[in-house]
Length: 301
Image (cartoon, rainbow, N blue to C red):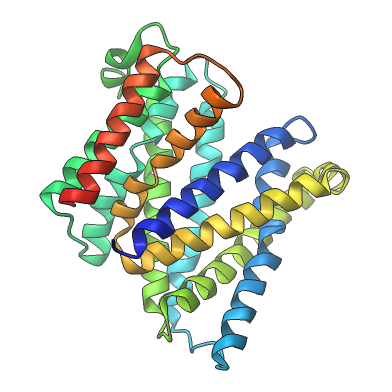
């Protein structure tokens, strides 16, 4: 088994834990604060990863080229823009359709990876991406009466376009992170991922921190009151991102993001086995499609 596969699975599992923590934080603070904790509390964890890796190797941090900072800036800002676009979709009455289109991230990452980096995806990998994306989109509209047909025919609606824009930004950020990490001159893929993660989180903490100081200062007090859950979200978020970055250093962003759709299966496993909630037939079919896409990726990608 290729090393990037278990690393991606670990990243998806940790991201699921981070999402659970952030949903819990939504009752204690606003969306901006709940988003900021993944960066603010994650940065010290990322620095710790880098320090431990360099201490173990007894080597300094590798020299960084100007292109590295350009890719980090593009990736960090694109991720923030994608997050805000996705949050904006939630303000629409039929937000599920926009959310579904935001799930096209792996397919868009394949396109941007080809355009920016020349990353090519095999026929099997492309089939896996399309199958898993369809599964995730189906889950997103599972509780919408119109269903997936409305999703496929709604591409020119405003919420769908914003959702597509969100997926585009996430696709750009994934490809940018891969470009930044691979531009680091060694000494190993873990150090490359850690350096990229630290630089990215520094940028995102500065940008979001400045925004909160300007527009939402009260969020800092709410974060302080919920510091324990915020710390958990930050640790899980930084660890998940470290796994994503490491995997994308070894493999194309599109393939990593396609396999990362397994996160939805983790979510539904928790829904069924821990919360004893029932799922609809569309959600079940979506899970089957995601599983099929992952199997196609593993055996034919």
